[in-house]
Length: 485
Image (cartoon, rainbow, N blue to C red; front, side, top):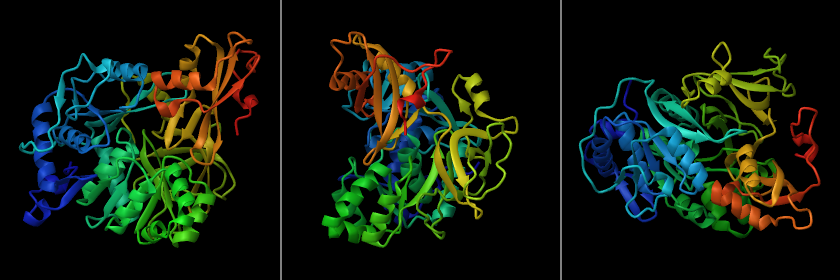
């Protein structure tokens, strides 16, 4: 298999070696410095099992992941904002041999039993020879399911290479591009697309650390050509544009504005286009599949759609019984199923869940419902299930929040749904039957309770108290009766 990162491993000339690869605020690494630092990490982890990476928005995260990938060791990105229960589950489930972190980072007790290696971005080491096996695990990324604890999706090296090359084809992505974003680095969007994508091309990454419209305007005005974001970010951009002509000018000069992780409301599409003359394009992917579709740079940026299948990706819509949707007419709804080299290898240690996720002929069941236009454009209309909430760019499983709520002494029964939110996309709603109807819990205490156990973005933002939850004859909670939109 060819190298994942040719600009690092192909012995670049003096000019290329001195080019900036990463910029996090005022901290920068050239390609030569990045290669040396990643080589030092590779020397440390070569021959070990999986390694955990404390994935803060810092250059140490990029160096740690690159070093592991170059050494042929699977990296497990960890969310620094996860609660104790979630961190402990992922550590136990992935069983890493050590954890890589930036010097000074404080790690949770769940990782205290692991050997720790601090990542020195100024260290030097020889670049290891990358493994030739394209099916070797590259990353294990944990994704919240609709029930139970998160599962580890094993992403092979071929999946990373194929999805990044397909996006390069769709977006005319080259070494001349400079990408700016403020995405977290513990999931696919920020890490694979937002860091590994530019480095595979030989371009530059500028990470804002924390999203704000001033930073976006500054970097796009200073040579950045691409912006990646989630709908929450683009909503805030749309809100700021009327009073910020410099932001409008900066966005108008960008080559590509890309939104992902959830649907971008058409209203925000139109407001941004009206103020800048540029349209945001959307793409569609999942942790298990990486990227499946995108609006192409040379295609029509049709608001409300996620474009067409990427090169190498087979996509079909099927009925409940698995038969093909009768027509791609822009109206007939079916579940998206995909097949291609972009797919994950399976859930770590979960052969049952892996088998259930695939059809007999190798298509992955996404659980997303969509329609497809005659010209191939795909528009996602919702989830097959009711338990996946997309809030602020995150995909959140209701089941784990319900379990956390039920640990609170004031909660007798709990259900969690999502409802539309103009900023977050969806906000988390907790439906609670209190243990003492005369002294029901407050939203703030439940939100703090959940955030401490899982992660802040998983806390409920709305509390609705009930005398009883609606259930069917089998005792299953009927969430549609709770008014999910």
